[in-house]
Length: 248
Image (cartoon, rainbow, N blue to C red; front, side):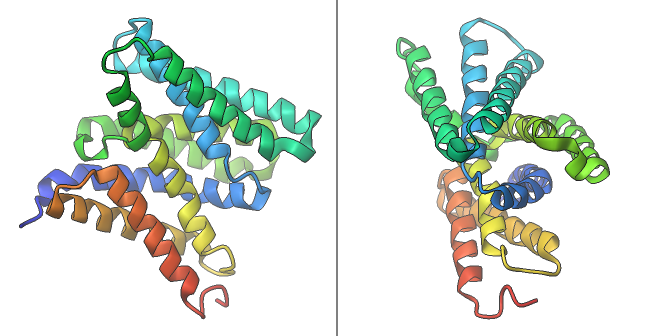
């Protein structure tokens, strides 16, 4: 068995772009204590994709626009609920996730390919990402990171949720809901106590997870998204078990 590195190059580049925005956002999410916001916003964006497909909207931009509109709507809703009921915000985030997931199931209930479509949106199709798909993701990632770097805390809750929604919208259609969550949370959790160099160390851990997962997928013909998720989780578990992590 051999690995076709030419086939895996574009998926790995897509993973690095996802990590570029998701690692700092994941650290912020962990600091805020709203762990499941990424799952909720990703599922709402997925609901927008499903609605666009059912409406017959053709083209990547139409689908992306529907997903972004849905995710931003979810972000606005969570901004409002955080002001109104801050003590139960995490519970409301979870409720939004299950409602969006159930809505997607209902919309695809009469679609003969609904089960396969839901599976693709959940686990993603990162192995089939091509170079042509990465240009717009790279531009959006650069814009979001620049905004994050320049404004930081001045963005406020609404600005944070909006950046989060746009970042998740751009990635969920490429890598799926599960990998979006793993990319956000696994590196942030593993290095949560690291005082110096946390961001580059988290990026390196994430890149290692993507590289190992894609390699295993190529070697053993495994679903790429699921393989990367498992490798990210395993890499995080290994780092958490190291006695010296968090003292640097």
